[in-house]
Image 1: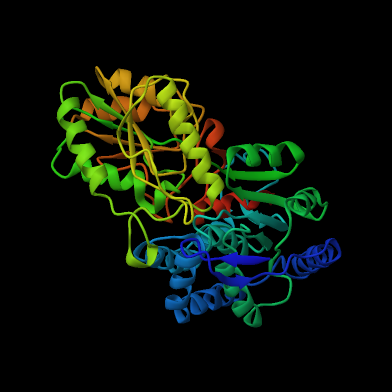
Image 2: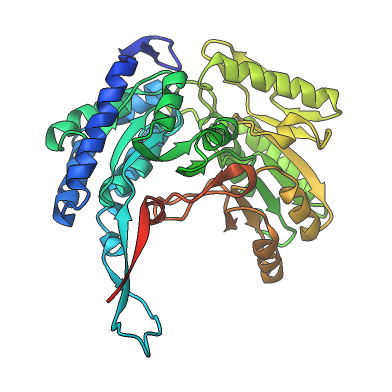
Length: 452
């Protein structure tokens, strides 16, 4: 299968799609490795993770450019991803205390026992499915905790951006035992086959809510973690410091063409500052650069034409429901698929740009009377990943932290803020379980109790 530069359309690589027979052999190899190495020494696991760090470090410039080309990601942002990749892998070396025995307090009076403890043990062969938008780092959020906890892992990259992960695993596998880390490039049908395979003990998926919940329905008895989508919201309170904030919000809505699951999509502003903020936000959206990712345009191409077509249809849907386009709303080009940074006001609460995940450089702005109404509006969503709250009022912060139905609240910051050590995940349709290396290590292990 050919892989294209998302801006120029040029072929930049090719991957082999595996047959069912090849997939079966890889699953068997991963299972054999786990059975023989599930009690591997921590020192060995550190060596394996360090080998990944070395490949990332030695090939940082190459991988940065490759991600920029295959994902259409601004070059500066691809560099950020590589830095995060290295940090993500390094975090895997820091949390081994989690899987050591821990004494626990149990009342053993009047029994023949003297001590009680727990220890975490690996689950088995894990199948990870990673998305197109962070083709290396989000794959490593599955690979690193799996290796650190003694599991083996099979990882499937997005067919839209498979080259960087294939390169990494091909380079690193010469330093790893066979069966520990396996990549499968396969069809969606064969991915379902792997999900349901009896030797696969856990599935960890990052992608759309539709696919994620379908996967979970296929394997009700298997452990699953789902990091899915969102239509992240911000609230701008009347107590917020507004200097520079409109540009911050505009960038948060359009960076990497909005193809981030915590990209700012819904903007709620206190009515007392609404008109001023809206005016400045329009100027900020109009200042966003669009074009070639290699020239560090903030708003680069969408991943493919289908995404552009969907977004332009949704913008038309919003207009039909009474929404006003404050800026943008038009295709810059079809190939590459570029959409102008778009800010919309009003419209129906049922329009897709308000209820669904846009995954594009589009945001909707709305006035609210107070922070309580903002909380209700943010919660009026099937998603609940992260939210950003701009306020210097502690009462507002406390109320919204307690009442927002999301996995994380960022105060005086955009919902797109993420560090790789954070617990990361959502509620409602946004997911199930948590990522972040320490928290993923918990997900990828089972607790066993010992009484002596």
